[in-house]
Length: 175
Image (cartoon, rainbow, N blue to C red; front, side, top):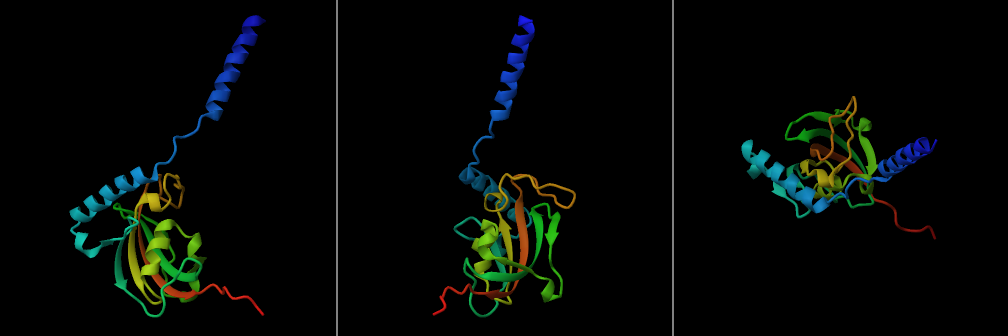
């Protein structure tokens, strides 16, 4: 009986240890440096380095067309079409690109991934941009791989985005 109780206590203690074990903290700065090396090497290998500019945040961008009007800010609601691929593999993981503007994606910029928050404001309505987003500014170490997606942890992203329109948040109060 005593042996059974001791064995049960060992199993319980081991179970609690495993259940309480946490993953190491995500080091965004280190991952950003790793991602940047991968992006730079892929751009060099494909001879596309000159086509992209690096934003201070770490996002690489190529403005295909600037658009007209005012650039979006963080609280704006945007209508966009986009194609999302892994970088540099080019595996399509999401797309809303159609020729029908009413089928566009509507969202508040603040709700987008950090790379979108940094890159989309570089264009105006009617503009188009290609963003190479380090995983640290994208989905980070989240594993989003499923039947419809090729996103494993620390996947760098390649988005082709067309900003159709924007609506500024009304910050005025009714009087």
